[in-house]
Length: 360
Length: 133
Image (cartoon, rainbow over all chains, first blue to last red; front, side, top):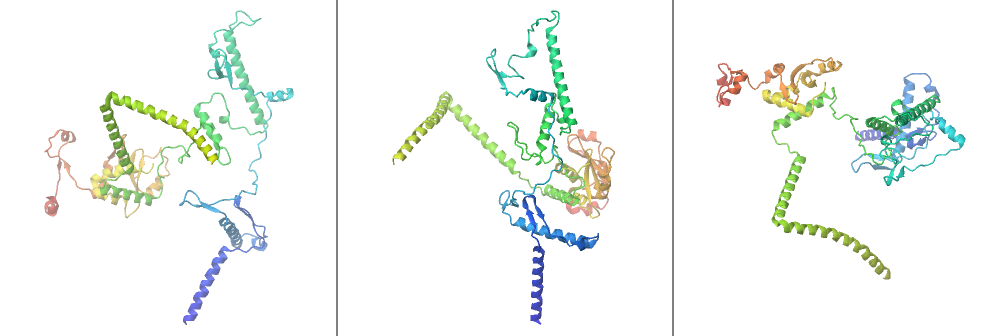
């Protein structure tokens, strides 16, 4: 009797093991092709055609089994990859994926190059090439390097020009200052018109033209520019995570609240959790024990120590008086020259030391 | 409408505690349903979960009040308990009394004057003999 029962138990255990093995081993005619960089598994085995015809629960079950098997194989491959613990000893186990082999097709068609502007066409015709100009120009009057244009440009502020010569053949009664101003306004307007025309041409030709707020105009405020810069930074495939920062741009930590400063609990959140939190709060309030805020306590202690040190130093200084102050100043300067002297000595010392070593 | 923050909850419970003492637990943790506090336009409302689920679908501008108003937060974030909370506080109150003097008088009165009358029935002294003195 006992023997039979033992046999039964063993048979049951063996069947359980087989079941477990069945669930993690998958038999396939053709091996799957894996592209682990894209977490991709390609199954070229022909499916059971008879079972897949027509909708129904059997088809669902077959498809589900197929998906499960293939996922099992993919996950088994993933577990074979070299893995490491991210973020220190307690962090999650992270597998190092290889480079993706499969090139995913583009979602949208590639952008077309923008059509050349009228100036670009003309320059190409005439063979004019861009000359790289220096940003700073020598200003003889100010005897220093000044910008070519902009704030404090070389050649003085054009708005403060106090002399405007009457050119030859011009009407002597005409106001030259007004003429200069008018001509500047006309130039600016013409440039703006041409820029908009180029933009319209690009738009008509089907090139990618950025949305209206992102067109650079001369009249954008600092906030607008900041916003546009942020949008441009985030407009990459990785949403700006690997975009190098400009020289003086501060590193922005990602704000979890996305621009909002205060975050509240969700309105209909977990009410049981809310209740337990409130009960705990009540318990804390009722326990009447002083809650020790360690940070505050430590800061208080530090401040106290600093105050004591400052007070002691102040007393010592006042005790020494003039003599003490003179000694202190001499002491400080000797410290500085001492450091310099040490630096000069060390290279000399090292060279002789090296020489000695060579001889030996 | 939003749930109360930690600081706001603390303020409300402190105020309630002065009137009903430890029994705030009975308000928070009720056997006959889940009740909660919600803040709407600086007023604290006490309502059941069922009512909350219905109130969520009303736009903020159109929502006037919900459940029972317990009190409000003033401009300087102090919590003022309101008389509409009386129905919920009465069963657990620490005690009842009648004001002997008006508010203005109470301010000008000397330290030994009587300001509250505690009206008791005949047997109260006998019942609470041990705790009274």
